[in-house]
Image (cartoon, rainbow over all chains, first blue to last red; front, top):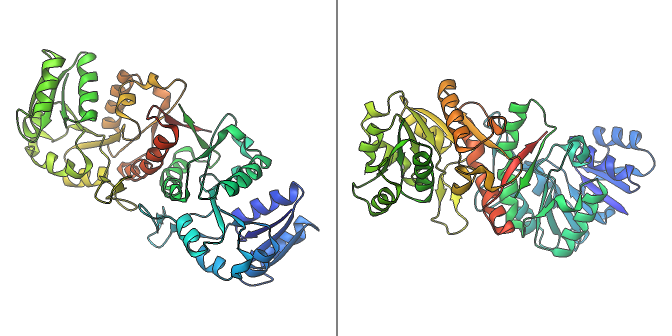
Length: 216
Length: 216
């Protein structure tokens, strides 16, 4: 299957690299075609990998990943042709982190809205699934880095899209019974607002190789 | 030891009841002396239990619990005589929940501030420890309600106060190695902003008998 990964940072590279490793064709998208990060990734990733603009990447992928920074996500997706988002599953991995007030970052969207909802509202023909935004990018594509059971959350308005995302996450190594469906896209508020605790735990544990398990 | 529990709601009753059950003298405080909830609690809890105003409760307790609603915490603590807070450990269990926009509640303080910090700033002579605000009140005082390992977070500026709170939490049944010290009181931002995920999980699991375990 063909995947479009928007974003050339650590998250985009981790997701795109995993998709190539499990046998998919992947285009990595950036603002400007020929982005150095994307070109380097392509030359390392081999013949199933390609790079292009955000618009070219949205056209290429049958399923899309938003791995851009939260502050740039709406603009990045807005540069796609609307028909190239129509009906497509868009896995939104981004968090609305605001570094303008220093470290740790704040969230630019909270409480009664979320980046996931902003994206779904701005692109109503895409089928947004919020996922993977609660773990470090290495863990996203290799959950066994942390031993034992731990959980991933998904949220979105479209059940079939969530099912497609769920199967994809299972192909990344996530156990089916550890993927928790929190309901519609408004649950993105919950997983995005978990970020301050996640960031604090990185400091406490001096490592990003951790995750939470919901025990009940 | 003598404890003062500010607040007569479910959280206050759970904490005050547990403290009496493990052998302490407890005063439950409310805005007006003779509050019906507090009187009922006293008559059920027995001779170690008493009730009074917030000010009387702050004077009575050698260690204090803030179990008032987040929106009323600063006012409740403000009605204590300042010398009755001086040097005392104040375990802040409250969350800054804002129900004015309907359910689920929003948070009235986020990002670069928290209720825990507001309380510490307003009452600099108290030694605030943020704790217990990430679990349901029944679980606060009976962690074994949820089987298996799961975690509690503490945060505060005063190491000795956190040690006192930690020992108290252990007397509530929390395992010493499952109490995670997130650092200074600014970490209250992290545990308070976890609330939207906690509220969402209640809906998903149809139960508040759950908690998270940090797996690493």
